[in-house]
Image (cartoon, rainbow, N blue to C red; front, side, top):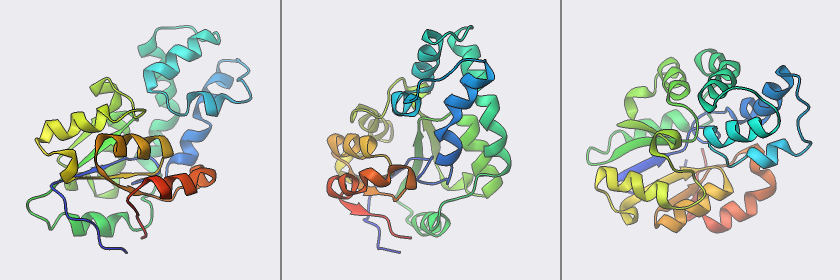
Length: 211
């Protein structure tokens, strides 16, 4: 494992970075629409890739899903909740990384995810890593997505740590760009879902996390 840069704050993405969960998410929207007897667009995964849960639910309504945003979110999450609670594993090298960073007494570790808090808490508790993090922050609770650096600046401000003293671990190319835009030091985490974008991830990030 490569030596990780010293920082006051470490921000971890969850899906595809801490957890090997991207396969579960890739076809979640499609599975949900099919369960409602709605034929999904062929490029559905591309359309909703960077959307928050609320944005995805609003889009599903345009395709004919009935119900308000909250009820749609609830029904979608029912399909994946058990996977987090029962089976999704850690990605390689994560446990060693967390153990190493937890020895840095003046550093804070937190999670920033576009998934729901319950998913993170259920998986982290089962996997024994919940105690490593000061808190879990979600784009839903903050009201920002990962398209721009604003959400990373928000978390930095929350802990009163400047972006220049913050390290971010992300797997998605758009999130890597956004974290760099915020002024953070960024590690790109290899993820099969973004294989086609890996060169962009490497060129944009400051370093690559190698388990």
